[in-house]
Structure formats: C-alpha cells, structure tokens
Image 1: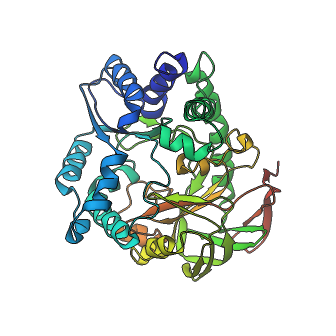
Image 2: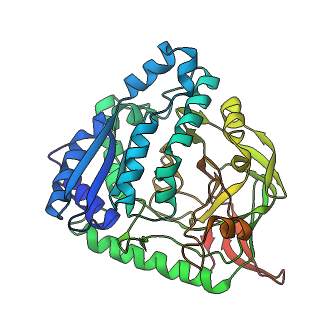
Length: 408
C-alpha cells in the first residue's frame, strides 16, 4: 500500500487541504501504529510545506486492551494529564493538530463497562484544555483515516484480511477525493458547493429544524445567533483548513434547552470500542429523558451520564442521502465516515465557532444556548426516508429535505 500513489495524494491532501499548514508551523500528529506508512508520508509533506517540527504520537490497540485486562482497579481513574497539558501548550503556541484514525470499533467489547467509562471520563477531563482550543478553532486541525486490519475486518467480515484492507483503502481514497490526479482542485470545487449550501442556510435564519421519518419526530431549536459551517473555514490563527477529510456536512449549534421529541438512529454508533445499535431517545426541554439501544445499552447509559451536558445536543448537521459516502452502502463503524453519510446530531460539547459573532466569552455562549460537556458524540439520524423542514421565527415551516434530498 505504501507504493500506491493515492496514499501519497492523501498525505498531500491532509497537509495542503486538511491543515493548510503554514511555513514555520509545528505539527502534532497522532496515529495508530498500523498507520505508520501514511504518517511518514504526511510528515514528508509537512516538511515540504515548511513545517518547523513534526511530533507524532503513536497508539496501539493491543497495549490499550492490556490495560482493561490487567490494570488495577484504581488505575482506571488515571489519565496522561502531563501529555495533554503538553499538547495544549503546543496549540497555544500555534501548533497544528492532525489525527489519523483507524481504531478497531469493537476493541473493548466484552470488557468491564464501568472501567471503560471511568477511563474515558478521566481522559476527557485531562484532554479538555487541548480540546477546547481545537473545538473553538483557535488552531488549524484535521482528521484523516487509515485502513487498519482490525477496522477492515469489522467493516468487511466476509473478506479475507488482505482483501478487506484493500477494500477499505479503496473506500477511504474515494471518499477523501484523492483518486484523481488533482485532489486539491477537487476539494476546492467541493468546498465551494458546501459554501453555497451554508450561505443559503445562514440567509434563512431558521429558529429550528424539524426532522420526520420512521420512528423520528424531532424538533431541534437552534442557538441564538447561530451560524452554519461546513467544508473549509478559517481558524482563529488566520489559516484556512478542512477539519474533516472527508466531509459532506453543513452544521451548526442547537440551543441546549430547545430540543423536543423522539428520534431513532439510522446507523449503528461505534463509541469507545463498543458498537451501539438501534439507539432510540426522547427529548424534553433539550434533555434526553429516555434512551434505549438493542445492543450497547449500558455503554449508552454511561455515555449520557458522563455529565449534565452529555444528555443535550451540541451539534446538528445536514447531509443529503445521495452523497459519495452514503452511496457506497458501507457501514464504516467510524464516525468520521458514517457521520458524513447521513444527517446527524451530536450529544455534548457545542462548537464555539458556530455563531455570527466571533470569540464570544463562555458566559455569552451559554446565554445563547451553547452546550458544555466532556463529550462530543455524533450519531446518524438521516436517510432516504427522512424529511426535514426549517422552522422560521414566526413558526412557518419551509421544506429543506424530502426523502433525504435537498429541496431545490
């Protein structure tokens, strides 16, 4: 795979499109050990773009699993705060952030759910100072994917491992728009199309969105003074980046108190090493009051019990059903891809940049309805049977999507 020209184009796209890396800028990259060929190519393109230093932190699923098999009881409340403090310090000094994802979606299935929840909570608390700099777009950042054997086996269980990895790489390259000779131009055209869509939504100034479909009747009130985003955007350090490679969404911030109704997930959710299926929740005054799943119920319950904000929405995103990722028919079991296959909502932390006014203080964000939480978990609610209306401030509904397609 390291000789496939598409891998090099993905690495170049990560630096030029995903990050827009500036000369003299540092880069902090995280990656699974199986993604080393891609990480090395990204490092090469980073230095070609003028990076002053690239620091790569590697993770290993086998080592992560050993913690849950052999770790002492009290160890699950421990996190590498020193590491995350260092990352936050790097971001405050304008380092860019790049994550390569490719984790085994079922790595922790069968492990002690309480231990997993405690470890995730400890990590979220320790990571928060760094995450806030990312979620507020203080720096340029992006996420790309690498096909790892464990992930490929989960996506294509019917194929031999080598064929599964090859099939997953093909899907990643296609979704990431690097199959052609000029991915940078392809991304420029795609970003222009997303910009047109978000401009339309910003001009409409809807007060709420109303989703309807099988098992779903959900009204999502939008935050006061919200703004739609999607595709490329300028971080507060002045650098234009694409936070997700790939991306098909336009998104904004809901009001944390104004979601009402019930909704079912249109795809399973891979969360922290467990696959949660058939999520069904009901909201009252913005808060989940009932939550059910056919598998992963305990994990779901612990997730929304992380803190008060974990039961409220921090994002709503619109994706047409007829998009390149959705049309593959592949369940990727990875949020980077599955969230870009369908319209979705996210529980937890809101994005501070999704407002008309920039650099709002925390108390003003809260006053406008932005949610706060240790988590931000996207899950899919859209599909070919989903209708969507925009609700104006006067209560009049305007069709936005019918059967998962934009109303033009």
